[in-house]
Amino acid sequence: MAELRVFPLACVVQNYAWGKLGRDSEVAKLLASSDPMVQIEEDKAYAELWMGAHPKGDAVILDNRIPQKTLGQWIADNPACLGAKVKDAFQGQLPFLFKVLSVNTALSIQAHPNKELAEKLHAQYPEHYPDANHKPEMAIALTPFEGLCGFRPVEEIVAFLQNVSEFRALIGSVAAEQLERSVGDDPRGVSAALRVCFTRMMKTEKKVFVDQLNMLVKRISREAAEGKDTSPSCGELLLRLHSQYPGDIGCFAIYFLNLMKLQPGECMFLGANEPHAYLNGDCIECMACSDNTVRAGLTPKFIDVLTLCEMLNYTPAPSSSKLLAPTQSRTDPHVYLYDPPIPDFAVMKIELPASNKLYLISAIDSASILLVVQGTATGTSTAAVSEMALHRGSVLFISANESVSLHMSSGEGMLLFRACCLL
Ligand code: ZN
Image (cartoon, rainbow, N blue to C red; front, side):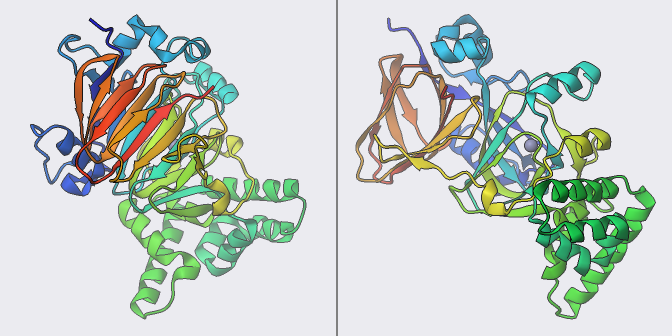
């Protein structure tokens, strides 16, 4: 009997409160089509689908010859499945966690430490920073997707300081004028002034910022009712975030951070120390295996203001600079590669037209996880003993150096995403 090295996974759903409800959620839709036995509850939040071996959501192997074993247990017993280079570089662990996210209300504004800072924070405050790893993340939109990422160009922040008096009141005129004067200055001067402004906002007394926020919400609501253009104050977004997180300092962060609007297939990369938040939409996400998050607002959770203000990347840059453009494979025109500047993971998007009847998922020197977003096929592999019925929501684990043939019959084409580690 062939050794089993390619198999389907039953993945873990996380029902966090910020997730989309019922069948509005891409996570719920993928779950329902992958398993007809699953009943979707329309008033339940389906926030995340975890495709990986993370201890808080380890996928279960769907093969009756490996009864009830999780992917993490199986990898521990069969570390060669990772590929020699990945196994050595990541101590026998799958280096990434692959996810689908369906975001209804904003997730906290946050940043993730680099490796050096993660080690320090974990040693000092293990209760808040549970591991010593960095946590780069990448989001690829499945539906129109909104987020915040990185500090805006300084001219935009200065314009908000001039248009939004309530925002200026938090920063104070001394710091605001310092930032205004820094426009056109050398980048170090700009970053220093930006750091002062952001830190002032984050350290504002709660009563003061809640008062200013209430005044701002009142003013924008009145202007909107009068039919005025509230876009100079980002009115629509401010009111939306305030309705989700009333009285939260994170509402003001929209004047510092780039608003990202991704179309399906567009991708943003969130490197170390980059402030970011997901606001709305469905996406594919890939990240390094870590839980280290430093929060800045839009959250009821612990906010570590000191660490956050210290660590952030205060380099202003336009939203376009946060996008990661995929590159088309030279050897296979169906494959687009999203390859961020870190070793832990990369994601391939595989788009197969309806005219394709047979397609080979190529062998690579890394374990990979494949998600079917659209289409149906029968999968065969010399490392899977039986045929695998693949359809929307199916997830496959593919060991390093194994390939899978897709026999497509439906005539609708396929859309697949494959996470791997390219060292
Ligand atoms: Zn994050």
